Image 1: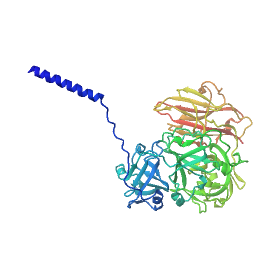
Image 2: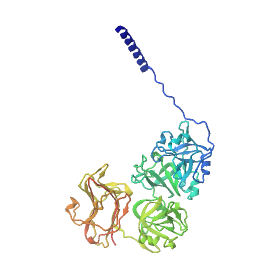
Image 3: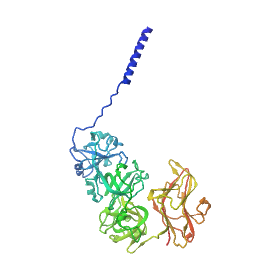
Image 4: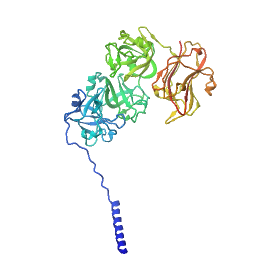
Length: 560
């Protein structure tokens, strides 16, 4: 019996070995590649579908459209969205699913059975999706298979059409029905206004940047902080930008699909169009102001033509009656009624607003005015903010010119940093067109620091009415006691500043300490030190439990 068992065991071993060997030596069959296909045809063009749109609604007809994917969520700049385009138009699809690009690559032909979906517009941008809160929302993921069908493998998407910014309409109805809406376009010979700044800082979800052409026309470039090029810096020079044309209300916008959509940027930038040097005697005209940006105040001259009525739609008002006193619109001609040709001007509370606003002084409409402010994006287009001066009808406010100015320009400039405690120090940074930054926060830790940024000697000999103003952004600060401004007459410029005598400057308007927004401080009197040689210092303190960030982009000392 034992021998019989041994025979069976041996036979089993031989068979097992044979089977194993066959598995090793044999070839695996590769799974078949299945090409997606549809067995139905489109019966409606994208243009016909959009032309039939009048209001948000459920699509109840058997409408089938098709188009190739021209943009998806691969870079993260579009979230749960993609855009398809046919020979007639393009439309945005809002879908409640991430990583759509894995199935719907650029160039993929997609058929859409629209029945059971909803069509609507988000502030003039027509979309296909589903219902959410009584308006257009995302198509639930479980419904995708019933409505979206791929056909064949990805092919070549439509080539981007050349777009001229001056050809874009400005009225709500014309914008919504413009056949170029959501299509892939290219802007040639354009440049970024905010060269060197990040596409999308992490303090807000989306950031507006500005592309401008050689005639001074501009368009908003909308970028998400979640995209994979958010931390890249805006390139200099002129080039070609490819992207999707969209709009928000009456503001045209442009969405890059990836950083590769920027072509041949770089090189020397020629002087912007228009005239003026930005001084009171030779102010920028509107064309040059629109083509320029920066944190340094400049004078801009133009006609007062209206306001933007602040509300859900932010509607331009050129005729009156005027109801908003916090802004005005300036233009190159007194009769301008096209918002795209205007610069919105932010009016600060106080004497400047009282003198210029059209609510209480409607007679200002049509008058030539000069304003002194920073050239920044305002109402999603080039504007003037942080006004510190104006000139109207031969009267106004003309601030004294600084006899000491430090712009920093991404370096410490003429200032010296002195680290008393801690490893972190002041350094040159890119924000607000160039600044200096100090922080004791290095993710994810807080570090104890005492760091000083000290000016060179500033002589106040023979000066009267001396004042200091600086431009700052302060955020996540524990207390404003951690960001002090001081003056000394006996600090040598070397060694521990605490060994010298310093007087803290107080009682001036400055950042609230909870925002990345740069603000100009109010004028700070230095009359106490007139006739003396002084140094100005910015003293930063942090602890292991709290470390804010202090950014300074400009320091000006002026006199009468």
